[in-house]
Length: 195
Image 1 (cartoon, rainbow, N blue to C red):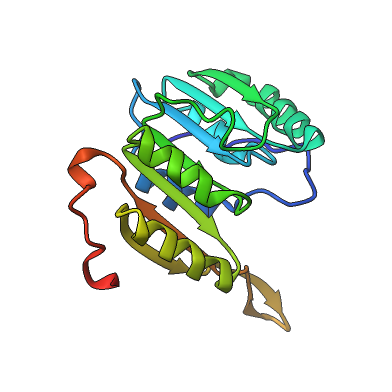
Image 2 (cartoon, helix red, strand yellow):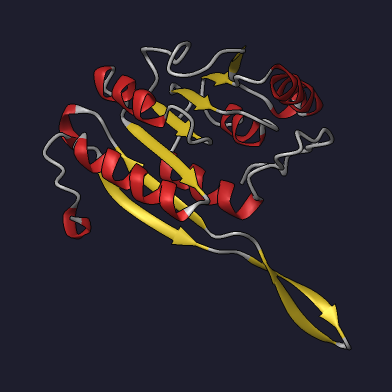
């Protein structure tokens, strides 16, 4: 089990919630020799946890102020980082490494071009999180069209709080997670029951 990460610096968009990160990392199944790439690093939460598992990490963020937040949060966790980490201020797909083993898309901007890059470079594990239903539909079709869709997972996390001496729950926004692979072994993937 990895130690919890510190996110002392805010990027206003908020970090991917810890429970969601746990599912992301279980789907990515990062190994010590993997090169992990993240598109849309924002607070750096996914990047930091990936850097505890993978050998190399490349994080892309198009907004300089958010990349600075990634960098500051990464520095706050430097004792737990084992990977070589490179931060790139660019808009994907430019800057996405051609040798990535695993890819996480945290944003929906240019996601089709990023998926094309993932197919061209045969990224083994691809995970994309989406919070808007319409984007989730477009992303599902984009994964399916490229023959890389393995599964779509929808989940919601609720946190308990005290209300009048009892426990009530506050729900986070639902997350739609698309999981796929662009390796040769995944080319015959027809999306199973999702089609």
